[in-house]
Length: 143
Image (cartoon, rainbow, N blue to C red; front, side):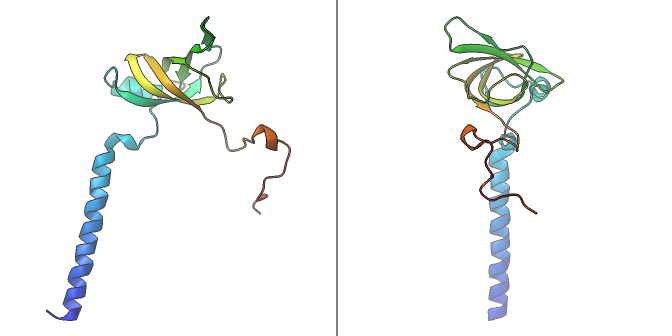
């Protein structure tokens, strides 16, 4: 075989290998590529009770209720279409509040109830840590 043909075969094998790796990665990820499911997604997909997943949306207004133990909270996550009641025991992040974005990691305990073991508060792109409030960003504004 000529050197030109050997290079062509090697290039084709490399393309096939890269394509195969991409297909394997996509197959392994399946539905896991989504960072979180909204309440509407959960209502539509009806995942099995106890299946670990991430629930994301907004904390509904006037929905945060604290138990007498001081660490267990109940709140409602909404996406404007569907709602899911969430129970969490632990310390909430500083940014956790009503009408704010939240991602809860845990599992469904009923079709419309979720038990969270981790709460992640989301913030918008304008967020500044308390110590940096009023200061100029390190890189300045893009012009």
